[in-house]
Image 1 (cartoon, rainbow, N blue to C red):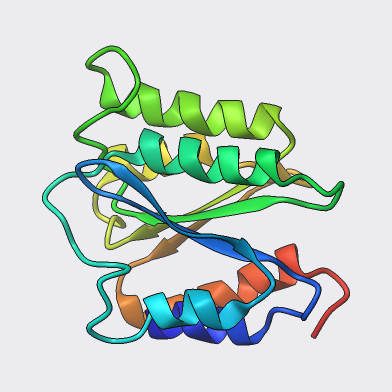
Image 2: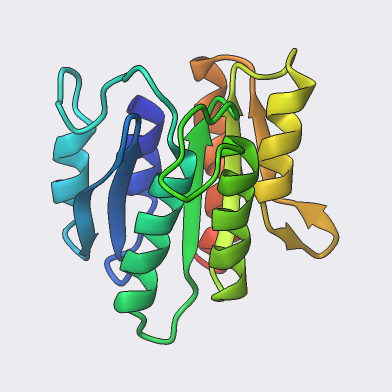
Length: 171
Protein backbone atom coordinates (compact mmCIF):
# COMPACT_ATOMS: atom_id res chain seq x y z
CA UNK A 1 0.00 0.00 0.00
CA UNK A 2 2.85 2.38 0.83
CA UNK A 3 4.49 1.80 -2.56
CA UNK A 4 1.19 2.38 -4.37
CA UNK A 5 0.71 5.62 -2.42
CA UNK A 6 4.18 6.71 -3.53
CA UNK A 7 3.22 5.90 -7.13
CA UNK A 8 0.10 8.05 -6.79
CA UNK A 9 2.27 10.94 -5.63
CA UNK A 10 4.14 10.75 -8.95
CA UNK A 11 0.99 11.13 -11.04
CA UNK A 12 0.25 14.44 -12.67
CA UNK A 13 -3.01 16.34 -12.25
CA UNK A 14 -4.00 15.27 -15.79
CA UNK A 15 -3.60 11.55 -14.96
CA UNK A 16 -6.70 9.59 -14.05
CA UNK A 17 -6.43 6.58 -11.77
CA UNK A 18 -8.80 3.89 -10.53
CA UNK A 19 -8.61 0.86 -8.29
CA UNK A 20 -9.84 -2.69 -8.87
CA UNK A 21 -9.39 -5.61 -6.51
CA UNK A 22 -9.81 -9.32 -7.10
CA UNK A 23 -10.19 -12.22 -4.72
CA UNK A 24 -13.34 -14.40 -4.73
CA UNK A 25 -14.72 -11.87 -7.25
CA UNK A 26 -13.64 -8.64 -8.88
CA UNK A 27 -14.56 -5.27 -7.45
CA UNK A 28 -14.31 -1.76 -8.87
CA UNK A 29 -13.27 -0.01 -5.65
CA UNK A 30 -12.72 3.39 -7.28
CA UNK A 31 -13.73 4.34 -10.80
CA UNK A 32 -11.35 6.43 -12.88
CA UNK A 33 -10.86 9.84 -11.36
CA UNK A 34 -8.57 12.84 -11.43
CA UNK A 35 -8.96 13.01 -7.63
CA UNK A 36 -6.04 10.83 -6.59
CA UNK A 37 -6.98 11.22 -2.93
CA UNK A 38 -9.99 8.94 -3.49
CA UNK A 39 -7.66 6.08 -4.43
CA UNK A 40 -5.18 7.06 -1.72
CA UNK A 41 -7.96 6.74 0.87
CA UNK A 42 -8.43 3.10 -0.17
CA UNK A 43 -4.70 2.42 0.21
CA UNK A 44 -4.33 3.66 3.77
CA UNK A 45 -3.31 1.12 6.44
CA UNK A 46 -6.35 -0.72 7.74
CA UNK A 47 -8.41 0.28 4.70
CA UNK A 48 -11.08 -2.10 3.50
CA UNK A 49 -10.20 -1.14 -0.11
CA UNK A 50 -7.44 -3.72 -0.34
CA UNK A 51 -7.43 -6.73 1.92
CA UNK A 52 -6.22 -10.27 1.38
CA UNK A 53 -8.90 -12.75 0.41
CA UNK A 54 -9.01 -16.46 -0.02
CA UNK A 55 -9.00 -16.62 -3.81
CA UNK A 56 -7.29 -15.07 -6.80
CA UNK A 57 -9.77 -14.30 -9.60
CA UNK A 58 -7.36 -12.38 -11.85
CA UNK A 59 -9.54 -12.53 -14.95
CA UNK A 60 -12.34 -10.68 -13.14
CA UNK A 61 -9.96 -7.95 -11.99
CA UNK A 62 -8.45 -7.46 -15.44
CA UNK A 63 -11.87 -7.50 -17.15
CA UNK A 64 -13.25 -4.89 -14.72
CA UNK A 65 -10.22 -2.64 -15.12
CA UNK A 66 -10.32 -2.96 -18.91
CA UNK A 67 -14.06 -2.19 -18.98
CA UNK A 68 -13.50 0.91 -16.83
CA UNK A 69 -10.73 2.11 -19.15
CA UNK A 70 -12.57 1.42 -22.41
CA UNK A 71 -15.87 2.85 -21.13
CA UNK A 72 -14.06 6.08 -20.24
CA UNK A 73 -11.65 6.28 -23.19
CA UNK A 74 -10.49 9.82 -23.89
CA UNK A 75 -7.96 8.91 -26.55
CA UNK A 76 -5.03 8.81 -24.14
CA UNK A 77 -2.63 6.07 -23.08
CA UNK A 78 -4.26 3.45 -20.90
CA UNK A 79 -2.53 1.00 -18.58
CA UNK A 80 -3.42 -1.67 -16.07
CA UNK A 81 -0.87 -2.35 -13.35
CA UNK A 82 -1.60 -5.78 -11.91
CA UNK A 83 0.05 -6.81 -8.64
CA UNK A 84 -0.45 -10.45 -7.79
CA UNK A 85 0.97 -13.84 -6.97
CA UNK A 86 0.52 -15.21 -10.50
CA UNK A 87 -1.64 -18.06 -9.24
CA UNK A 88 -5.26 -17.53 -10.27
CA UNK A 89 -7.40 -20.19 -8.59
CA UNK A 90 -10.88 -19.00 -9.56
CA UNK A 91 -12.38 -17.57 -12.74
CA UNK A 92 -15.28 -15.37 -13.68
CA UNK A 93 -14.92 -16.55 -17.29
CA UNK A 94 -16.29 -19.93 -18.40
CA UNK A 95 -14.09 -22.98 -18.06
CA UNK A 96 -11.88 -24.32 -15.33
CA UNK A 97 -8.48 -23.26 -16.65
CA UNK A 98 -8.03 -20.26 -14.36
CA UNK A 99 -4.52 -19.48 -15.63
CA UNK A 100 -5.63 -19.42 -19.27
CA UNK A 101 -8.67 -17.31 -18.36
CA UNK A 102 -6.38 -14.72 -16.72
CA UNK A 103 -4.09 -14.71 -19.77
CA UNK A 104 -7.12 -14.40 -22.07
CA UNK A 105 -8.43 -11.43 -20.07
CA UNK A 106 -5.03 -9.74 -20.39
CA UNK A 107 -4.92 -10.52 -24.11
CA UNK A 108 -8.37 -8.95 -24.54
CA UNK A 109 -7.19 -5.82 -22.70
CA UNK A 110 -4.06 -5.61 -24.84
CA UNK A 111 -6.18 -6.06 -28.00
CA UNK A 112 -8.22 -3.05 -26.83
CA UNK A 113 -5.01 -0.97 -26.75
CA UNK A 114 -4.42 -1.16 -23.00
CA UNK A 115 -0.85 -1.65 -21.76
CA UNK A 116 -0.66 -4.53 -19.29
CA UNK A 117 2.05 -4.17 -16.63
CA UNK A 118 2.35 -7.07 -14.20
CA UNK A 119 4.18 -7.34 -10.89
CA UNK A 120 4.82 -10.72 -9.28
CA UNK A 121 4.91 -10.34 -5.52
CA UNK A 122 6.88 -13.15 -3.92
CA UNK A 123 6.85 -15.40 -6.99
CA UNK A 124 10.58 -15.49 -7.81
CA UNK A 125 10.83 -19.17 -6.84
CA UNK A 126 7.67 -20.20 -8.73
CA UNK A 127 8.34 -20.35 -12.46
CA UNK A 128 4.71 -21.24 -13.26
CA UNK A 129 3.44 -18.10 -11.51
CA UNK A 130 6.12 -15.98 -13.19
CA UNK A 131 5.24 -17.43 -16.60
CA UNK A 132 1.57 -16.57 -16.07
CA UNK A 133 2.36 -12.94 -15.26
CA UNK A 134 4.88 -12.72 -18.11
CA UNK A 135 2.25 -14.04 -20.53
CA UNK A 136 -0.22 -11.43 -19.26
CA UNK A 137 2.21 -8.52 -19.64
CA UNK A 138 2.56 -6.26 -22.66
CA UNK A 139 5.85 -5.77 -24.45
CA UNK A 140 7.42 -2.39 -25.12
CA UNK A 141 10.38 -2.09 -27.50
CA UNK A 142 11.13 -5.79 -27.04
CA UNK A 143 10.93 -5.63 -23.24
CA UNK A 144 8.21 -7.52 -21.42
CA UNK A 145 6.52 -5.26 -18.87
CA UNK A 146 6.76 -7.81 -16.05
CA UNK A 147 8.47 -6.92 -12.78
CA UNK A 148 9.54 -9.43 -10.15
CA UNK A 149 9.17 -8.32 -6.55
CA UNK A 150 10.54 -10.89 -4.11
CA UNK A 151 9.24 -8.83 -1.18
CA UNK A 152 6.99 -5.84 -0.60
CA UNK A 153 10.10 -3.77 0.14
CA UNK A 154 11.04 -3.98 -3.55
CA UNK A 155 7.81 -2.34 -4.70
CA UNK A 156 8.99 1.27 -4.30
CA UNK A 157 11.73 0.75 -6.89
CA UNK A 158 9.40 -1.18 -9.19
CA UNK A 159 6.72 1.52 -9.08
CA UNK A 160 9.42 4.10 -9.88
CA UNK A 161 10.41 2.05 -12.94
CA UNK A 162 6.76 1.73 -13.97
CA UNK A 163 6.28 5.46 -13.56
CA UNK A 164 9.06 5.96 -16.09
CA UNK A 165 7.15 3.75 -18.56
CA UNK A 166 3.64 5.07 -17.87
CA UNK A 167 4.46 8.72 -17.25
CA UNK A 168 6.86 9.28 -20.12
CA UNK A 169 8.05 12.87 -20.08
CA UNK A 170 6.90 13.58 -16.52
CA UNK A 171 8.92 13.69 -13.33
